[in-house]
Amino acid sequence: MKVQINTNNSSKNTKKILAASYYTFFVNGVIALILGAILPYMRDAYHLNYRTAGLLISFHSIGNLISSYVAGVLPMYVGRRKSILLFSSFGVIAFLLMIATSNPITLIILFTLTGLNRGAVSNFNNRAVNEIATGKGKALNVLHSMFAIGAFISPFIALLFTRNNPDGWVYSVAVVSVLCLISFIVYAFIPIPGDNSKNTKQKSEKVETKTDWQFLKNKYFLAACGILFSYMCAEQAVNGLLVTYFIDSGIMSGSLAQTMASLLWLVILFGRLFYAYLSNHIVNSKLLLSGAFGYLIFFIVLLLGRTTISVVIGIIGVGFFMSGIYPTTIASIGKIVKENPMALSVILTTTGLGGIIMTAIIGAVADSIGIIGGMSLVIISVIATFAIIIYNRYIYRNTDET
Image 1 (tube, rainbow, N blue to C red):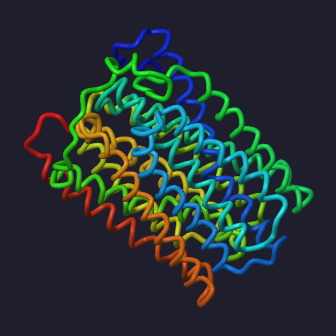
Image 2 (cartoon, rainbow, N blue to C red):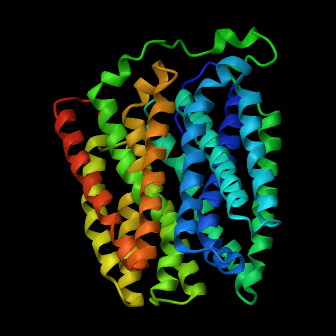
């Protein structure tokens, strides 16, 4: 799928940046789902309760939150390359050490490191692609489709090693560590426009930016923050706890639960490619509104489902309609993000808060009344997403851009 390019860099360098962004975002998708896929096995092997399991996912989100902000600031002092290399090294280290310790405190630190890795990559890649194709929903939907491919494959990586041996989860973690190492190498060699870690010759290539914080008063930006905050509450809960929910509630076996997680992201992949096509014909705010309505309906179906057929219907509907929400929301404020260096960091930080809060709450509630009761709370964030997207369409209704 071709992406419209708008950049002063050479075509060759642009292709390298896009290829690197696509691969490393693919790995980000693997990281996002592998933690949830291995969590039931890790919980059994290390004798962890639901509260601790929820905290692990929450601290992954905390790491994601921290780096979403810091990864926007640090490049101003050490350059883009050194910054992304630092954060991408955390994934390699964390996944390797995860195999060697069962100490809850150490595991919390390691899960935090995986979040630091993931948040920095998200910041770097969204910024890089947005600079190449500002405000283009198509470009960002393609980028996030690579995330969906990684997320789709991830549960199969876990299933490959755990099908006949529950302790095989350690091998899937080792595979992810290798993928993170390749990402580190990719970032070490790709051309990075605007990087000042070596010299200042590329300063002329930097995007002219504003240094004020007026974007924090922008109603379109605030609406986008609200959408992604509530959206990530649900997505992180699904990524981290859906497999555990299916298994521990008795709805399905472990292998089938892993397959359902992959099915979700397979549908998200096709959904994002479809939304990438639609974004050339339908304004962003209308796309978001249609997606939010279907997302709400099918999430209710998923939560109420107690048979394989109903769960599959729910997952297909949820995956398709939620697929375009994140990239389309980012694209809708593409100009704001490009003009303000800290805008992307702020919105990714806000987004990360959603994942932290919801998974921690679900873990605590699940310990008290069970995993079904805990996961039922997710519907609150889905309703909130729908409501804010309605408001978003209201404020955009008289504009031609979105």
